[in-house]
Length: 110
Length: 311
Image (cartoon, rainbow over all chains, first blue to last red; front, side):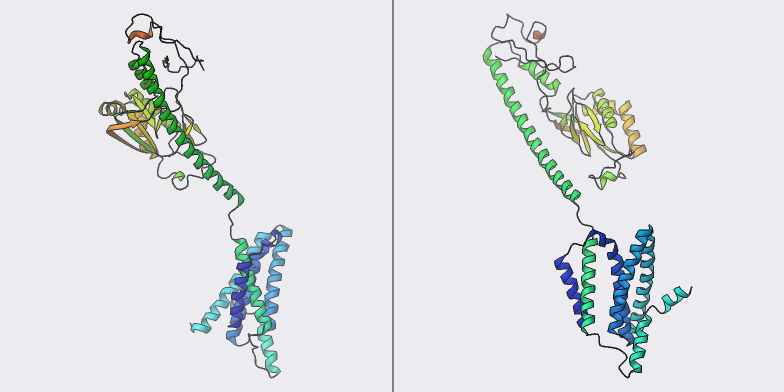
């Protein structure tokens, strides 16, 4: 429950402060969000599996975000930024879906 | 395919399982608490990231939109101002005519009132009321302008749109059918008024119109309808309706009003000479009538000549 409160607090702070994101950072935001979502859903599934580990969560979260941003950056330098972004979104999207499916099986036994 | 299979079947980071196994081997519970500082801080960070991303990636009203809005309000305000001024011009014109009539009466000269009235009617300077026809034209229902009049397509001609040429042909047909006075959307067509286009907007006498276009034609409504429908313009109109789905409704009425042309102004004035005094009693010379010639603005243009006499 406390982590959820933390998430809500972060959302509130972000919405309230409404910081302006520098332009060079904006292309990485969508990918970073999806990577973060993947890490969060992975963590929820790990909690339900009974194997949650805080260090693994933190490392997977940060590395997901950084790697996703790096892939987009690399793609931009190579001129295939949009294609690589699509690839990252597809992979992370599939992971999110199967994690959510697993969570659903845990919660609803269906 | 291994990649896809592992991704689909075991999307969870292998790190969780390994860490759990290590902890189990060390005799600790497999899972750590979810309430550690690390987790909470990271969740706050994640929430912050989500909120910031959502806010900065949401399409914001751009500066161009603000400018456009500002322009729209200014245009609307100016249009309103223009209409007010037009009404003022109309009322002042009426006053001027009253004074003219009074001056004529007092001058004791020949009675030119009927001549002036007649000429004013012909020149379209005064509002008229009488029986007539209203013809409402509108773009076809399928054209984009229906939904969003602000975004006119920058290029291309849309078939379902009423064009200035259509209006010209129809108005000329109405004149031909015996209309005595015509106005479009409340703008009187004098003999100097032009129906033109600018971009895709139709301009009548330099004032842009917006759809639907309501043409009011005074005259014998029955006779006009009978003359108009088989004429070229009538056939053209029915063709427009059939081929391009341009909507048109024609209705007769017993009492219609067309406004005066507020833009009518004196361009040519001639002293009252023997040829003009045909309607007035041609008695002695009219010393009390001061003969005056105002500056002819464009003498060569085929403008209607309006007599102006003042004492």
